Length: 270
Length: 271
Image (cartoon, rainbow over all chains, first blue to last red; front, side, top):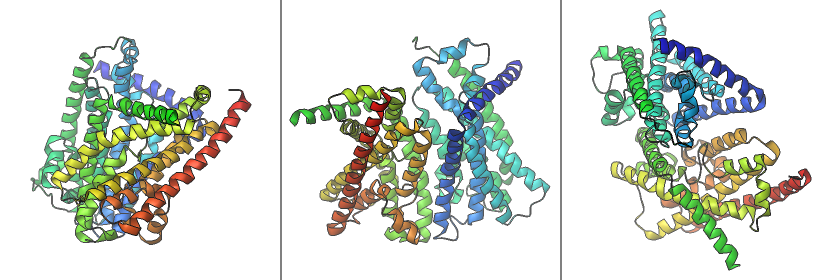
């Protein structure tokens, strides 16, 4: 616990250092943030283009798909903002700069997570948040306090689940030093999948993201309940509420993987 | 000038070998392209189930389009990051470009050779396996006629040259902008959208689709994919290849113009 507190204390100053350094080149920052906004927006433009030809995709209307898009992309955006720089770990292991982090009296995890903190990622979060806000006014859901809280909880659990994937991916890079793209398949790839309704995919694929890498709990499970859609795997109803449990288990697993990765680290000596 | 040719051939071979050494990264890339291919293929299946002839494609053709896109993604650098232009921008920023300009080789041809070498590796290393994975699971419309494959390879080569020519302009912009990350990102977004990577240009609604099919990015994926799908034969094939070649020549010429303007600037700076 003490090390967690210490890590959080260290994370703040490093982040603010990177934010200050980013804002030194204001024009460049604005372009990158707008670019980040547009890059993630492109996914949604694709969805809108698809809906220019059809009224429903896999039985879901545009506002419903936008809801899936908004919840998944906001969660990924938050996890990416907090921990996204971890995919640079492989490069650090390769070029030997990892050693510098090890000798500092600050938890390595906090240093790696805050490394080159990219404030421009607010672009994605803003874009996803706007789509989510729009979709919530358009879907046929009777919004009350409980349902709104469920959306907030979804976003928090989703962020934790994606964060666990980022961390596990980084831990994996202690062994496979230039495999950052594998991590991207699970984070960005997972996000791309969660933006579409589960009914679009083959059952085995849905089983994979439910039971193997449980990304389905980022948004599919709770969203299906909110939107009143059947779960294609026919799981019992209480499974929809397992998000927090899944997130906690995944974070614990990611933490163990990280420790194992860090312990196995051998410097390149350069 | 056989000597010059052998120099650029060696540069291209060097580009190929350089990327061939990143084995883990290539394996990771194959995995990523396959995962994304699956996701997009299922989304397209849902779309084409309801609109069976959208954009003039049947479902097997639409799915083949998806996997062709994944196979060409890294080679034609249709994504943010990757490719030679970031390296060239670094050399311009640091001043190393002065050394390059002293070499008894042409700067544009040098980088074209290096990038074609890289692209050839990416096409083999990151293209063949995802396509094979796609063909195993989905019903694809791959041609049986070897002539179609030959035309496809020619079209892909032209696509790679157009992709290079666009990124060469980006790289040279560093002479004026110093930091290229902003324009790189904007250009990569345009490439994703207007190449047909996110949705075939033929499935774009109305005027937007026609407009997009005239832009240079259409030469990077839409045209080669249509050649592979057998939608361009005879005169249409010739028109497609001519469209690609015209963009390649125009953009390479523009790059040359920019290069001479930029090198004059270097002399002025005394760099």
